[in-house]
Length: 105
Image 1 (cartoon, rainbow, N blue to C red):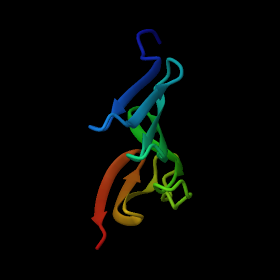
Image 2 (image 1 turned 30 degrees about the horizontal axis):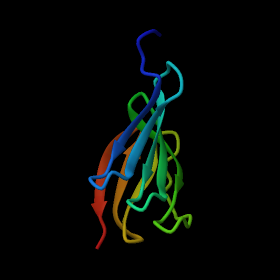
Image 3 (image 1 turned 45 degrees about the horizontal axis):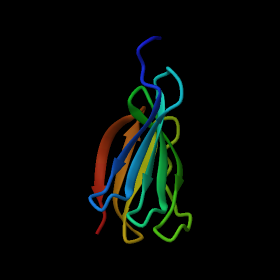
Image 4 (image 1 turned 90 degrees about the vertical axis):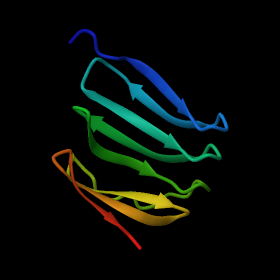
């Protein structure tokens, strides 16, 4: 298909540190998003297909330690949101569609 985005798009925190990179590698409906902590450490990587979350590729705390990322695979499963190394929300997906958000106490 012609006219699809190819390349890298970057977003930044207010302090000018890199917040995210959207990576469009070819003219397909798939792309990766890489998020960073404010200190520059990798936060997580996620693969999207057809504009929907498809698979979590990696997740790290602000010190660079690997952490649980949830079970999202092929568009179905959970995706964990962290604050200060604590899971604060769990997103539930089915076939790439968000079906529920659970706030953790």
